[in-house]
Length: 471
Ligand code: ARG
Image (cartoon, rainbow, N blue to C red; front, side, top):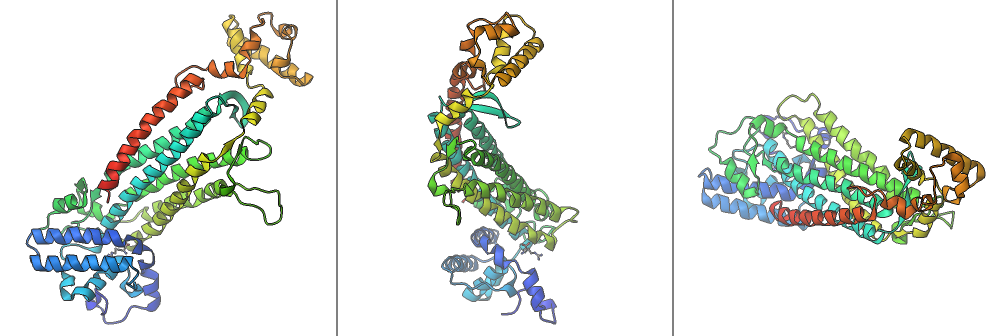
């Protein structure tokens, strides 16, 4: 069979042009969605009396057979049929004869491909919310196991104030929670049906777009046919969200890499998530977080790539838009890989509480608290800051930490000091003194964990509901 659009042409397509313009090598990923959309479309054609019931039934059976064959790997896609839409239509016609050619009545590949992408992405969005949920759950479990683990908190990568390790982990739970919220929020924009826009202007057939929308579980249809076939905002939105998730993962990756270095020794990643060196027998490399950090680059690249493809494109469809797919598929695969590995990697991570504690004992991260002590005695904060600055300098010169100073040494800097200072300087005291909503005090962190768990239950319910709806 020659090309489905061959009528107007007198010459064969140049072989290199065929190879250059075909998208079948990557858009075959959309086979299931393409058939799903076609089934709804042809059902509507029947309901509207545009096609006779017999033809509709034959086409539906043919489509289902074609999909089965594709899944079984029995259909060999051909580059000369360009893309998944034409390959499926061709296979359908081969299967049921010329009646298969009626399927494309009242639609265009432009609204067809857009529909496929919407169907594809809404499923992925639900899967990603689920993966984020699993990662949050793993982080929460570690947080619960580390409610009494004190670790230096950093700013400028300099020890700042001691915090609970649980509190540090819960910061990531919040970050991934925002990611999940953003994804689920974008669902309503993805869940808008382009089909029925035709090539750009609508169609002369008396179609029922809202019926197709309800068949496919779309909440609404595009308002404007030009917008319907030109819009790729929903993909850009997903690529932006994926970029932010990868940014979060890369920050956590960086911390895991630092923490598992000999310099920190705060955590040890499970052997199953590390690799060795071909030459240095002692090495255990944190390859997974390193690669996640590295792959963040390609996810950003895919976002910038599509933004650039769409920049200045006139309405409506242009072939440039075929470039929306590979980056999207690549981002889906990259993000899936990262999230799938991260949850079990966090769950199996060993936390070196002893080493964290030693780090806290050997730093000045309790300095703010003695400043606050003096403030509570009536000294203006600025003066207290100066006093403690001098005290810390004295310690550094003497090779001591604050808790090593005698009360007389303290009194050299201010006579407001008394014995209570030793209590104030204890790491537990320092941590628990930050007893504000969202702070690191043990009771606050325990409540934050409880709140996060309730939110997680809501996310799980959303995933359960939308896994069904997005199919
Ligand atoms: N393979 C094309 C794409 O991905 C499908 C739409 C083709 N439309 C067209 N008018 N050539 O964008």
